[in-house]
Image 1 (tube, rainbow, N blue to C red):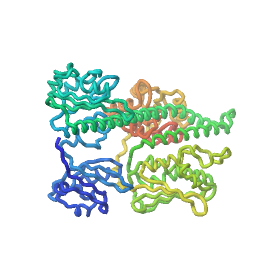
Image 2 (tube, one colour):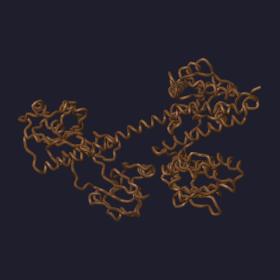
Image 3 (cartoon, one colour):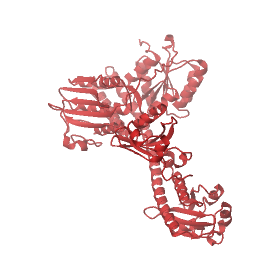
Image 4 (cartoon, rainbow, N blue to C red):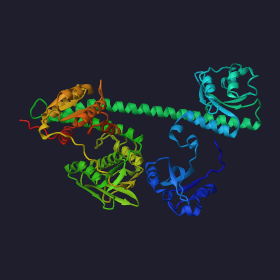
Length: 639
C-alpha cells in the first residue's frame, strides 16, 4: 500500500462564505485554485448526479459519503467526503478515493465496529513504518492465542498459532504475554523459545521476532504485537521505541473496541427486551381496554355494573397505557436514527390539531390552528418524532389551561420551521425549567397536586425535537400562560409519486362475508369477537397462521385481522404465503395487522410482509371498525 506524505486534501465549510483550506495536490488534481473553490457552495462543485446524495447526507447526519468533484478538464474527481457539524455549520474533509481505500477508510462503520478490523489497520501501519517486515497482533483469551491480525503472514501460519496455549516459553508472543515483558528473539531457528515453531517460521519466511505485550489502562494483558524480520537481526533503539508505541496504541484500540462491542451487544439486548416487554404488556392491556370499552357499551343492559365502576376501569387502563407508552417512547427515541419520510405539512399539523381540538373545546377553551402560506406544502421529516412532540406539547397546553385559549401556529423563518403552541394557562416555573425537562419530574410534586400525570411530556418532546435536529424554547405569554416555540431545520420536498391503492377485488355482494380473526390469546380473541359482532360483522376465530391458511382454503372471507407473534406460524409468514397463493388466483383479501408489536419499525415490517394496514394494541372499537369499513366495506345491518 503506497504511502502519501501529503495526499490531495480539501477542508472547507459547506457554504461558500466559510473557510477553505486546500493543499497543492488537491488544486493540481482539480485544476482549480483556493480562491476559485471558495466562491461557490461545496455542493455546486459536485457533478449534478451526486448533489442530491451529498444533500441527503447532510440532512440525515451521515458521517461520510462518496461524491465526484468537478475539475477544469471536465473529468470528475472521486472523493471520500467526511462531514462534521460545527454548531450548525457543516464542515467537510475531502480525500481522494484510491484503489486501496476500502482497506484504509477510517469512517467505514463495519471496520470501525470490528476490533479485528482495527488491528488489521494497525498492523498495516506498522509494516509501512518498517518496510520489509511483517507484523502480527495476537490477542489472548482463556490462556490461549486468539488471532487478531497478521495481514502479511501466510494463512497457514496464522491458523497454526490461533488457539495455541500461552506459557512461560512459548515463542516470542506467548512468553511476552505470560510474563508481561518485551521478548526479543534475534534468530528464530536458534532460540529455544521457538523450537516448536521453527519449521512454521521458516515456511512463513520470518527469521527474527520482536514482541511487545499490550494491556488495558488497568494493567491487564490483552495480547502482544510482534514484528518479524526476514533475516536474523536485533532491533535498533529507534525500532524498539516504535514497537513500544505501537503496542501502547494497540492496547488502547483493543480496550476501546471491546467496550464498544459490549455496548452494541447491550443495546441489542435492550432492543430485544423492549420489543418483548412491549408485546407482553400490550397483549393483556388490549384485553383490559377492550373489556372496559365493551362494558361501557352494555351499561344500560346490565344494572349490576354501575357506570362509575366501568368508567374507573377504563380510566385506570388509559393511565396504565399512557405510562407504558411514555416509558417505551422515551427509551426508543434515544436510540432513534433518522426515519424520514415526505409529509404534507399543513395537513399533517391540522390532523394533529383536529385530534386534540375536541378536548380543548370540551373544557370550554378556544382552540385555533394556523399554518403560514410561506411554509412549504411538502417536507421531509421524521414524522413519528414530529407528531409525538407536537401532541405532547399541545396536550400539556390544554391540560394546564382552564380558561382562555390554546393556539398553534406554523411559520418559516430563515430556512427553519417554527411551530408555536401558545396558551393562556397557569404558566410554568421558569426557574425549574431544566429540572422539569428531566423524565418523571412534575411541576407540582406536592401531596396536594392538582394535575395528574407522570412527568414524561417535556422530557419526551425534548428528545423528539433533538432527534429532529431542532430545539424548544419556552417564554411567558403576554397576559399569562406559556408560549412553547419549536425550531426545526426545514427540508422542503416534492410531492411523492402517487402509488395506486391495491385493488381489493371484493365484490359488493361479498361484503357480508365473515371476518377471519387470527389471534392466539384467548382473551383478546374474545374481545375482538365481541367488538365485531356488536358492530354487525360475523367472524371466525383461528389461533395461528397455519390455521388461517387452512381456513381461507375452505371458506371465503371479507378481511383478515392478523396477529403477528403466534406459535406454529407467525402472522408475517402467514401473510407472505397468502399473497403467494393470490398471485395464482388473482384475488386480494385485505389483511390488517392487529398486534402488540408496537415499536417504530413494526409497522414497516407488517406492510413489507404484505399486510394492508397496521393497528397496534390496545386497539379501540371505533378504530378497528373504521379500518374494517375502509378495507372490507360496512358491516351488515344487525336486526
